[in-house]
Image (cartoon, rainbow, N blue to C red):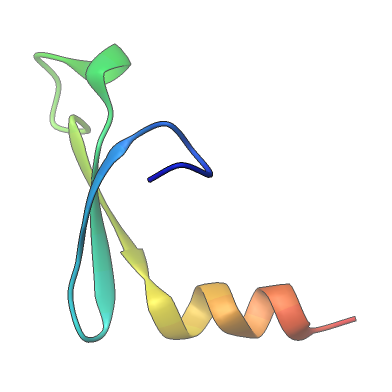
Length: 44
């Protein structure tokens, strides 16, 4: 993902992001919900 510099895989409702700084932890791959992200970006 050029915006974050992370390796990302996009799905219909979510994005899986690989966080290399979290290697070896349960948080190495994190899930981002697309609807929640869009809602928070547009809510002002």
